[in-house]
Amino acid sequence: MRDLTILNSNKKQKIHHRSVWIYLSVIFIIGFPIVIPYIASVYIASVLFLLFICIGYAQGWNIMSGFTGYVNFGYSLFIGIAGYVSVILVIDLGVWWPIAWFLSGVSASIVAFVLGIIMLRLRGSYFAIGMLALLLGIQLLFTSKYLAPITRGGYGFPFIVPVSFNVMYYSAYLIALLSTFISYKIITSRFGAKLLAIREDEEAAGSIGINVTMNKIIAFVISAFFGGLVGSIHIAFQNYIEPHSAFNIHWTIVPIVMVLLGGPGTVWGPVIGALILTFVEEFLWSHFTQAYMMIYGFVMVVLVLLVPGGIIEWLKNRGKLPKIRTI
Amino acid sequence: MVKIRKSFKNKKSIEKNILQVRNLFKSFGNLVAVNNLSMDINEGSITGLIGPNGAGKTTLFNLITGFLKPDSGYVYFRGDNITNLEPYQIARMGIGRTWQIIRIFSKMTVMENLMAASNLKKENAKEKGLELLDLFSLIDEKDNYAGELSIGQQKILSMARALMFDADLMLLDEIAAGVNPTEQDKILNMIHALCVNNGKTFLIIEHDMDVIMGHCDRVICINFGEKIGEGSCEEIKINKKVTEAYFGT
Image (cartoon, rainbow over the protein chains, first blue to last red):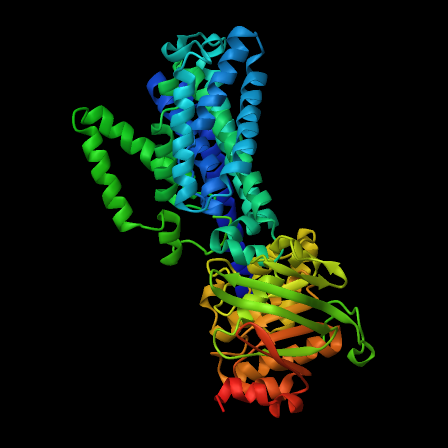
């Protein structure tokens, strides 16, 4: 008996030590980016800034498409609309920038709500293609003369945001943390379970009393909010806005690839995907400028072939990670 | 027996219609799937729905649960017209269903399957889920993916999922088919227990006549979308039209 209790207490101690290490490493990982702008070069800070932007985009895309399985090919729509809203609010109307960024996220959500009512009647690939068509159509609308009095048409316009790079850096960092936290909150809630049920079998979800359409629209609205919020900061960083760059399909594809690589429908998948792809892209771009897109594509193909369900799923299936939702 | 919702204590005291189907008609192009069908289901009863393949049994289920809209006719649940409601609204009124092919959420854990079906607060839902899993002896599997369960367990889970939102009427589509005899007995005992102790009403589609004759209070037989017989098991056994539909003589 005594031996047993001793064994148990040792075990407890060990677990305690381990959790201390986990806490320390979490504090380090979260705290490290805070000091980066003061100790590292501008280049490293800007790479990290891009990483946070990508995490925000990927988490936003994942909340809709990873959880419900509705692949959204029109994600840049929200980025572009929020970008225009924030720039017009700050430059033309003189709104204080944090409020403008927040309002641009809200405006993206409103657009998502209206579009969701119409588009979420479509299923599967029809939704994906429909959103892509909408993205291209709205991009064209912004280049046309009809909106030119507000948006300056297809030429776009340069602007100077009255905030420093550090402010943008910390804002992006905060939103990356927030979006991950919200994703965690959703997946552990009953709302998250309902979204996953929709992904698994939409009809069966309806048969157990889930209001499928409403849940999809809510997820879409949250997704668009993060897309828009991050997008407005991203566009502020670029100091120039025109329809082609604001509604650039590149920023639809990048979050999709990141989420698919990391693990769709997981909390940490988008983070892992963004981490890997941002650094791989940056490395390739700076070392093989000529062949960078070619190698990037090749790396993507290899990764998708090796880990089809995403890295998180791959690790879970091999017992390297516990099979729980919060990871 | 754990309390699920004891709305009715004794099934014999209830002789009320929980579900009324009136002149239901549904066609797919030239094919008439359900033809002028009317039926009443008593509260707290187990009713069997039989008929040859393609008779329109599953179509009837889909019409009742709102997955298909009838061309004409009405469905009343507890006196309320539910004919044109959405499937989720019908489910929330208290009609649960299972499918012929198993449609649980296989990439979600057993517990998550139940959580998705509840409209309670998270803690209460969890408590209720644990109670149900305990009742159905699935408690050891609660954190496993539902897709890893045996076929019988998956069918039980799909029933538990309907109980999670307090369905009073359960439409079970071949719940006992393709399951080993031990699990089949378990499922049928469960249906009886839920019926007697909790006043749940069951409408079950089944091809196995032993199951129908041994467990149902009443049997309804349909063929080519029309009701060709209705009554107690004994009445159905000697019904000429029914035997004709099954054996062609």
